[in-house]
Length: 148
Image 1 (cartoon, one colour):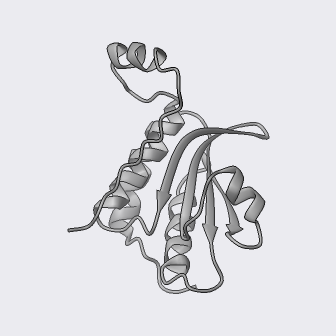
Image 2 (cartoon, one colour; image 1 turned 180 degrees about the vertical axis):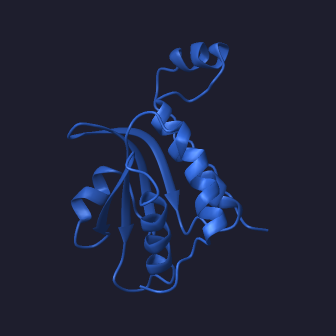
Image 3 (tube, helix red, strand yellow; image 1 turned 90 degrees about the vertical axis):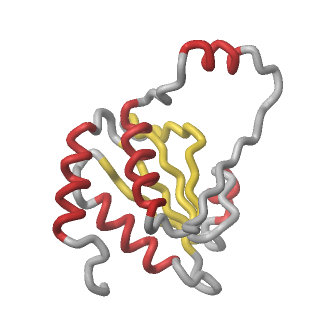
């Protein structure tokens, strides 16, 4: 493995943030053996983050070799991740996905996503939850973030 991506100071800050973790979280990482410039770095970053607490666990998949699992979670990009809850052997899919390497400002989003899924609550206002309850058809919502 290459040198650590997280320096000691950042790792310590993340560990402090992880003191707020409530319930177990499962990270499902999807990489690819070819044509994936950031797969190795992303996997290493996620391995380092997951190693900071026993509340997090990681399963690593290959987008091609594990195509059925990737399709089940609607992952079509590598590197890609599913941030899910864990209840015993059950994976609780809340629909949280990350595509690409969560570097720079996106690293904060990764940590925030882990904390949100661990709390099992979106933090949405009551009025927003009530509105969402009125929806009768599925909604495909994507948020795109760029480092620029």
